[in-house]
Image (cartoon, rainbow, N blue to C red; front, side, top):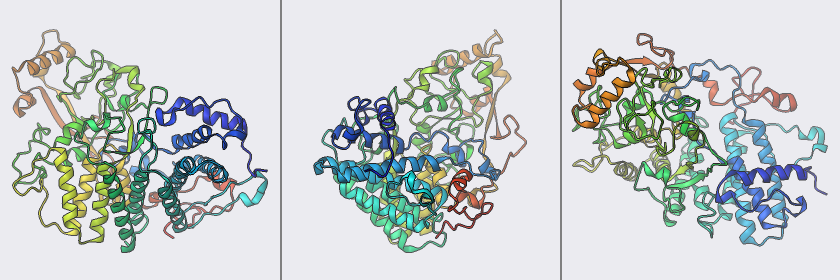
Length: 605
């Protein structure tokens, strides 16, 4: 008799949800009616069970994560040292998923399926168990390792103590290695199975988390051996991926909209459909009444300034072939800037309704939206996120049903992970330069006479580290990696005491005089007609200043250009969060994390 209790009703719910949720990879036959005893004797039902694990375990669009960094506006208390209790709610849900994974591993292991069916299913289950446990330890440090199905009849035996973080990581690596050994390089039906975890995806994920394990969050004293392991893992991942046709997509902007199995950049993907959608489109676009949007990824001045000029050199580098002008700050920049960020007067063809949109020009000045409700939602930084926003999607309600797939790991990150590990190991500067120049070449940056794409020649290990982290910030902007990097490399201490700033843009008297109607909308349309008709050049600094006045403002003090706002004050204890008190109340064997009230568990052991 099974030692666990899982009812037909629970299985029906899990697999019924599956039918509504992803495209081909999770969209097989209707599995909502079946006998639970047949799940592990019917390959389609077993695949369905793994599909719901995939659906629950795969990350989605990181809509608000940039707000936990210096890259975007965000009203999160931990950025200012104001969070004194746990705000992470993943603990219980993670263990419910781990329980289902353990069920799958036990049942599949005992099944009579042929290896060509069993191995990929078990490989995916091992992968997601590793992933969920790593999500847990990177949040809390060591957690209870539960690797078999537990029965409610076990009583106090269910009160499992926290394992050391090192013990958890050893199990995570073991599960990943097992998964890599079971997973295929590719699936037979590349289109239908697009999005499933492949061997290469698991190897790339292993490289990513070994970089994390070697970083200062887990290893403040920096043990060389961890970086050597990470370097080897990332080398192996790159070798596998290249052998299977993966590489940099030729179009930095278009890679997000290539949702075919032939997208060479996509390594690990979360698929979306109208039945299982996201609201990122509404959140990143200019506000349209009724969408509750205009809240995600509003770039700070810090991120804007981080993008180099078109020759790859800093905006402050006097040797750049281009002169930076803070008024028309978008001119002659790294081409990724205009493909990631929209500014006041940017050409951005969005399918939004009037009066939000009356031409292909984007406006972020105050009262530019015309509608009172929308005016209160003008971007607090003067910028919008443009990356991966599908301009063809109509604004309004349709933008709440986003179907653009999320690429959790793409080839550029694999390259940057390898570069980072190679640098920490040392002696690999040629490899690192090759990686950085390949990425910058794809971006469209000028090669320069030295073919270094703006990179300084002969950089030291420390300088290369800074260059790699900067390239991650630019290439992976708004992809959830900046806050991740700040945390894993303990770089919050580098930005503590700094302020997140943006631009407060208002119209001038000359703008108000553009149309005799005295209506802002008519003035705006008149200016658009002048720009698009070629009678003025809005990319000329003097012309731009004729119609707009721009001042720096704090993102926390909207409209106040004299107050610095709140300084970033990320606390050391936030690198490992406290366990939810509800979990401790249920399980007296749990010891709270050191640094939190009543805590003594050391997450570094």
